[in-house]
Image (cartoon, rainbow, N blue to C red; front, side, top):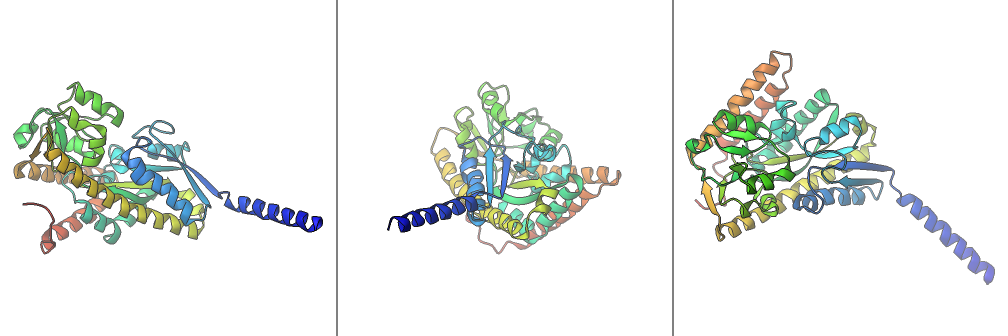
Length: 355
């Protein structure tokens, strides 16, 4: 009896050891992000990426996420991947516009498509494939669409901004292509990272600031220090996020792991967008009943941003093509053709917004 009991213990111990060994990840990735731990985006996107890839791969893949400033600064996720500080980056391509303007089309392009149309361009209109080919060529990285937010707030402002004339001289915190576009329309844009925005706005060192969606901005408290909430976010009609890694890292992964990364990112994109927009509506409702004044820009200003956004894109495309780089042109052609087709033929759709 004693011998049998010992044998059972030994067998059980062996099984536990084998189970523990099997549970150890085959791939462990360090992922830098552009948000803070515990933030709305962390809970909506960053945590689900890690949880779902672990679940989808039965523990074969583990992702350790790091907030702003640990592996890289806000604007440096892609650089951290390229130089090896991070294996992955959850990243906003709009931060790379100064390095290559084509990034604006998969980040946020002023006057561009709203989230649903942009999602369709990426998934059904060839946008993802074009984006991946572009990043392989110019950076040696492989991006996956991995999260979205809805339309941003145009600005939280100490000044009432509604017309094109109101933009003149406005000290406006922004980023990406919006900085060039709003400057061309007469604003005085400044680009500063997230941790500095609230203090600058509170001290009125700037007149206005944009960062993200109603949800993101609410959590940051911008509405507490600036009276006016200017909408819609024509400067960033949708926000697209990528999970990026070196192309060689992607190509080294087994096909089944690649597929599971793609499925996980598809899942995160769908849930992140629906969660964001549902909460955005609730936040707008709260703001409407609070002390802030919500201002809707007029059509002249909206049209000016759309027109200047396209002019900016075409000018950048021409400049780069003269240097032998046609990526801006290819991205612009694909994006604007889809946007025009969508705008001219989607009038049959029900729009669930008060008019």
